[in-house]
Length: 67
Image (cartoon, rainbow, N blue to C red):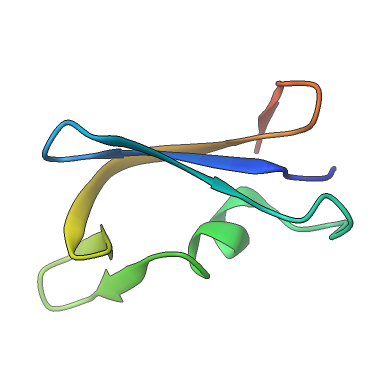
């Protein structure tokens, strides 16, 4: 399945959408998100541009959720 968008809800209330190339087949959402966020294992959190990520999900080009 091709992921084309990652939607991240940040702890501060912001919603961020990052576009991903639709030509990358076989990637799962977790793998793609790791390219955009910083994982802080000491604090057990992920950050996007310094802001903690509350939740995230990925969608394909038809708008369906990607596992």
